[in-house]
Length: 124
Image (cartoon, rainbow, N blue to C red; front, side, top):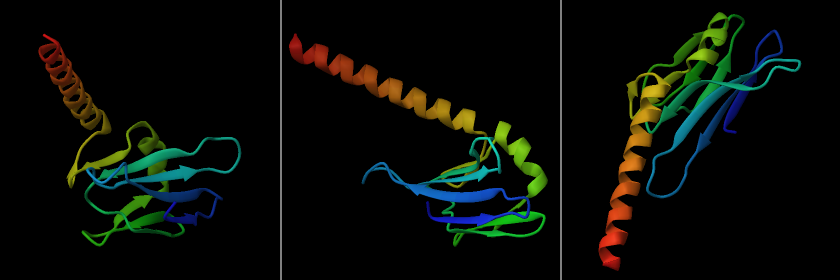
């Protein structure tokens, strides 16, 4: 976890930063964790750009600070909607998470096919 802050109702907003290795970019995830038994859920995601650096909680919104762009201002009332469809950025372009996941899945499947063919050719 990189940063966190608490809203007036006790919900904790957290910012995570991760890196899968030297050949991939950093990813960032902002989650909300309401009080009680509700699970922590992702509401904002960024791969590569914009870099998400810190959080600031206010009375009716929270801001996600970035050195690359203006803060992402999120009203507290928007978190339920963001559970269903998180705000997502992929290399600086905003778009739905599903489309980005499909692009990655297709590229990975293509890589597996190419590797499979290469192994078959080497064995022949």
